[in-house]
Image (tube, one colour):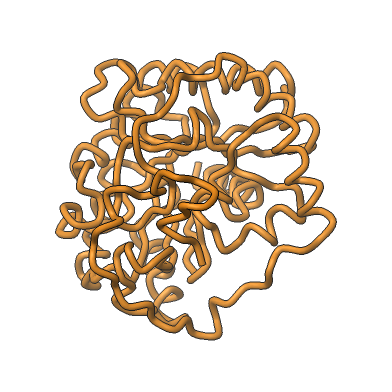
Length: 316
């Protein structure tokens, strides 16, 4: 379990905006979402490559439950532009505050690490950088180009912030030609003020729609979490909204509470509910759906991308 305050190793709270909030109850996890602790040799090798190149991963920063499985296979999701986010989403364990300056060598380091890991498919995400004029769009584009230079055959999936009030930023990223453009809605619109207070639902939806308008061939992807208090009909409406924006790939996972200071888990959705939502999503026209308690945006991303391409070819 992660902590909000670590005053021994870090005199500054990891989540200063949450430090004085009352504790939320921690619900006991059902057996079907328990995972093993990461102890494999592959995990240690991946960790070593990350440290050697001075890179940050969302796997660690967001306390992903799949880190042991993915890192054992040398699959990691790079988190660029630092480890400090300018937003304070109620569900997220990434550190919040005022970030430092961008590292101009980071794109090259990501490319080098991609080559060392031998990745056929890579996922690159970032913290929100509301402090930057372009929200970090140029840095995303430079990272995509650096990966292409180091590993020409590697397919690239990006998971971006919303670039809210950053005119022209989206166009810069799309012009760099990632293979998959992912931006998560995270939850239903009625919960944005409590779960994603710095974001706007219809802006995020429009961002995904705009990607398709710029480049109709680019795959788009988005995800939501269950367990934040949403109603089933609201989840189905989000599916319809995403299909209206021509989104290809939907992920649905279970929200897991990082600490007592984060948004509480309202419920653990049963396995048959995830399967039911997957069936409905395919019926609504998504080319690819990943729906399970431990589904995360980048979990099995390479295998899912192969299936996504095959599904498009089949529907062509």
